[in-house]
Image (tube, rainbow, N blue to C red; front, side):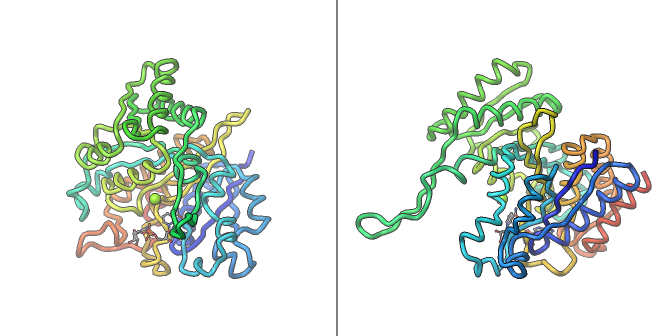
Length: 366
Ligand code: NAI
Ligand code: MG
């Protein structure tokens, strides 16, 4: 069965890095027989400019029917010209909610080649290899009531609500505990149980599911502020970290410093499996549209390419091919391939396309 991959390049560097991820996936289709069919669709500000809507019906239908989405980035200056209602229609939050992709995987690792030579080496901790499971469809970014309201005295107040149901916590806890079993069998659950009600419930539910279903996994609880400190100080102590939507957003960016550049971090957002064991999925580099470097062909495509590796692992269910791609990235870096964001002064710098070429060359050579 050929898997339908909807490609949504988006804004800024999104199309530049997504093109390279698609080119790498094309290699796996042509050379390894991975059954993928990739189709580009218009959405967001690019679509607003030509179609008068940020989400054409055809794009939304394709998204809902797809086996997976490969997403670039959103965010452009023109977006301020787009009415709020239209912005919401084409938003990433709507896609995440529509696909119910509650488990957001964000792997972070220190690449040995960069630990030796990158300008970030003081922050690149050898051996760090951890993965966040960020809850993605509830909590602070979705809770109601929300909005900006005018109070009786005429002044305004912004409201967000941090809510989690037992079911929302339980499914992401199960996912993370199961993932820990496939790695080093260690889970850190991060919350603010000391000051937040939803955090107290989070800890209670994670503890109960661990005891009942995953007693073989080592579980520790950590307060979110301490986790920020430990990520800076001792990132090698972590294996899998499960946390809520807001803390996961912040802490995974903190952890990003470990690996050198924001441009190298991939992510996958996954739904619960259906009756056939298939999960809906949205793959994207964690960086945004990077307007400061867009259009120059210098963005690091490795975050997008490593997101394609996650697609091979989770959607194509081809873990050996995913490993092959991650090994090729490691080989390209070891051979000295550098984009501007990870180069030392004086080092030869590759373009976005050049870095992808180096990865494809490493795939051909392996
Ligand atoms: P950003 O991630 O776009 O850029 C932050 C810094 O990292 C910039 O200096 C940029 O040049 C650098 N950077 C990012 N990706 C890179 C790459 N592949 N290679 C080399 N350097 C890279 O975040 P920023 O500047 O805060 O936001 C810009 C726009 O992106 C905003 O409109 C924001 O809303 C949007 N955004 C979208 C996201 C998404 O689509 N999931 C996530 C984060 C931000
Ligand atoms: Mg973020």
